[in-house]
Length: 392
Image (cartoon, rainbow, N blue to C red; front, side, top):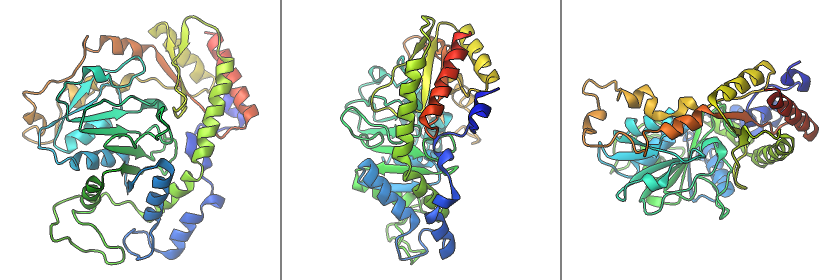
């Protein structure tokens, strides 16, 4: 019998398992008020409540709720007032949305190779780098480069994680972007947050995300005298209400992940051909990351875990230099914009053409942890994983 059936457990990620109608007081209130647009009322909107709550939780001076993390990255880039065709250095291993956000802003993504833990290798950055996006992949806190004016943290998978100095991910760079996609620490299906301590940057972000003007609650629409064009990234009240419910469970989710991680460490098989990528104390421990001796062993592990109902995933699809958008410089514009502005820019930064990174990805396997399980159930899950790995 598969592990999910023995535990009566749905393989839903993290915050999704904490969605409960009886716990949805904010959503119920928003529905009862009949106001789902954040600027419709002069009272504090759900979106504003969410932003205030997030600022308090993360220690961020300014917070903006948007539709998704990709929009948050775009807003962060736009607020730097770039020139079309400027380069943005991004990790070579991350989700394609990072490159998409750069391209949609009229800028050129330059993949930078990663270290053994899939964090952007800051030693490869040129001394004149202006804009760098650092991704905290799999909840693992990545180091930030020094001396770069605009460091944007993609903390989509690392909500609640902390740097060694105690500051939360997303709050040390110029700006930080978070995701509430279904497969994230907390979820509203879709949704995003942007944080910054720069008041001028936040004002630009806030205006651009609603057609170029700063809105007055209860008096929509209004236009600034110095309005510029923008887009509509304004979140809705019902989505913000769900996110508020989720934020009440953030410490519970992170604590459950931490407990499951510790229990799993005690049960790992003693095999020299299966290693575990260590995690720092501040990581959001959303998964165990295994490094196998070979691609063949990794593939056997995938097959065995899948057959036994143990969720798992690999990371090969996140190698951006091999994604069609970057490899083929794909664009829907007739003139190839913005790639047509990139002739003099490097395609990627790597010492070996990403050979080492391909090998690491080929041998890496991730197994998610389940914070909602009781400790006894987490022990059962850890033992089931050990048995599956021992049987390879």
